[in-house]
Length: 391
Image (cartoon, rainbow, N blue to C red; front, top):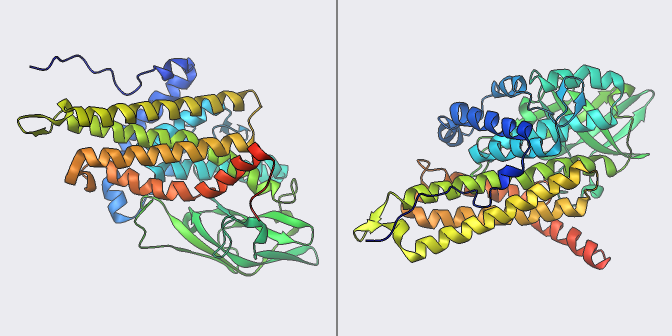
């Protein structure tokens, strides 16, 4: 008979012991919310291709929207608390983490960082409460990895601005109460706030997705949209604006995907310790234990990387290249873990009865959005060599 021992869980290195009491409280609160509110429903939402809009005020009441921002109704918590939130959200589903990170890091952050006091007071308290949803319009149908070539443009007409163009693959687009849209102007790239219902501004959902199904993804179209002078974000001109927002969101992704990876590893362990073949549990076979061991090792490395990025961000020392390394490495690790977990579950691994194929499909989108793996590779390569390979 094989010897048995009590399993120790997936946090073999006890990385969460490094969290503060407040950060552990955030972890436990978000994990309970995900377990009680999300997990009983997420497979159905994924299959139906929807995420209930009423989740936003529930997340707002927990203080999770724009939680890393200070003032204006935001919780003002640290980067590691935000990272832990992203991790626990993505352990449930990448679509849920996308809702939180787009709201806080891509829609609220530019208003908080670059907006006027009037813009901040108008939008941030309602967005922090989940009473208003935001979206971030940067990617275009023909310009994804090269936002400097965007065609969406705004021209002055008296004191007004007139905006024309289109954006693609916009999370929350059709349900957003305000869109943060980046456009070229004579002065350079500027950010504009477009409230829902603005004349000439339309949004429609993208359907037939096989990834991030529990998330709203939209196209935005601007046809001679007339905006007042106070619609522009006054605090930034140039690509620095949208790229700084992406750095905020990519930091959350580096944490978030470790949650998806953990969920896949947990599912694989649970399956391996209950499924029997050839008269014994498959977790007792060396090949299966070898897979589980490497999945655990890879997960621990990814979690350590996320924690180190959090410490750098706390100290105000983090760089975009470091965030690129975290996003690139951790997403690839999470995909590899999801795919390996699927092999342990066999045919059951492709059903929504288990979370693995849902996470694997979602991670294919996470690999691409907010900077493709290739673009992050080039950012790291430039940091190492001093040579740009973009053009």
